[in-house]
Image (cartoon, rainbow, N blue to C red):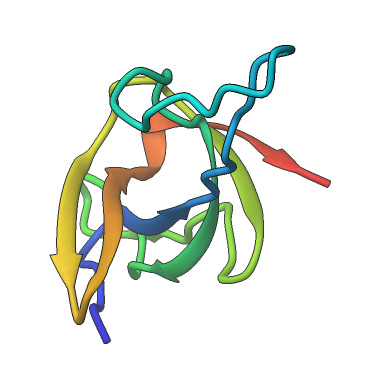
Length: 94
């Protein structure tokens, strides 16, 4: 499995098939990028200038809301993940 470094977080987007009122399924490239995802892995945290490490605010398994165009898509073992910095996370979804 992928293990993020520093303040990075690995997310797996929760994509749902979207249908219009007429029942037409929109192609994934025609839809907006999803903004919620499940946290798959979390790095050790952000390192401050004085050498201290600040622990991440999120944990594996949580669902988060993230900035629309944040991160880098990575394909690993047949699945697509999004690697983002913790600062790109907006909220934890309960």
